[in-house]
Length: 414
Ligand code: ADP
Ligand code: MG
Image (tube, rainbow, N blue to C red; front, side):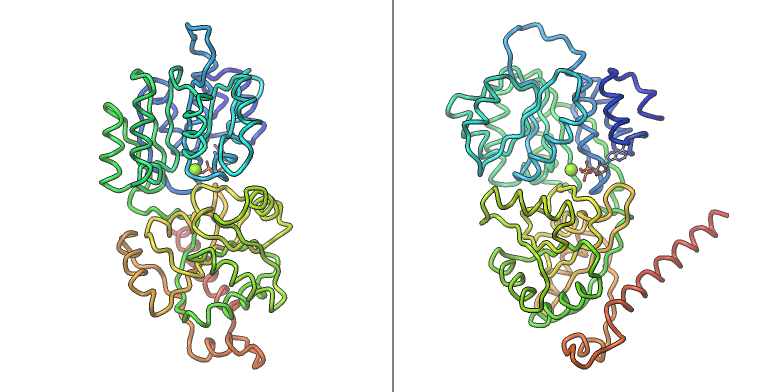
């Protein structure tokens, strides 16, 4: 079924076409009808499968056709997200899909002045995309009311319901009209979080796509055993072997992010960092540079792993193994978005083997190991020796394996 065959308002159809969205993705196909019917939905689908539009499309359709009895203005849909970057992104997508409908959306997050946000709120906002911090702050100052809310959405729902946020969420829910519709979207969810989610809704429709493997098929991911002190050499080598590629590097802490940046600087590799210690202006500029490709190497902490949709990230490198197994899925999910393919490589040191085990048991399968023999390993550390057993050949091997797989698949199809 094509989007043009749906019974949507004309502006929404036009916007979908302008964005190049012709057919719904699986998660969109399955979520749109129950949401339009007014049902509560808990949707779990892999990273990069179009969850944003899966809720934004039906919300726009509902808000532009459902009659509002009261004349008084107020927020009709509240979308909660965990990070500043995601608030900006989700508000942006919603804005694109909303053009010409007369509806208004605002992205609300901390780290910037509140006055312009208050001005916007006073002018009237139909859809508010917000991080909890700034939202509760403005609500306590009396600039936000929730008595008109018809739809509450939690994007990255498991993260939003994790300890620390849950009491905020309960408090929020108590201020929203009982006759609301509640939607949860995420790529990962565990039993405990599922229970919490069900505690906030009645009879939610559960939609789960590819529950067995939380990592999308578009992502080829592998682990390389690299000792802690050698990681920078491997990163340097990898970046130099892939000078035109967009590479997202994840590290464990803010301090390590800055340290890796310095190490790369010393070997003439330009990169930028993003983490919670940076001012919002800087964070936005860094995101922009990475998106438009003026900076090709971004070193990040988990702050930006959730939900961010950056076009054409060729490689994700887990310079440090993620401490939370869910974050493995969210980190590698920054590549291989939509129909694109991506590659993710994790550097695992001896100290991190235990973390790797936990991740593998979370994924319910082992991660492919990129074999590096002793000679290759030493050659990478000692550049001056020069080597033809380098990352390039490793990547080629990986690619070859992939294309054999593809060939086998093709044959099977025949
Ligand atoms: P998720 O939230 O599932 O990780 P996003 O909502 O960020 O994924 O979408 C991933 C990418 O897919 C985005 O770049 C988006 O523009 C694209 N996309 C979403 N829906 C469609 C569609 N129906 N057709 C084509 N591209 C789509
Ligand atoms: Mg998302």
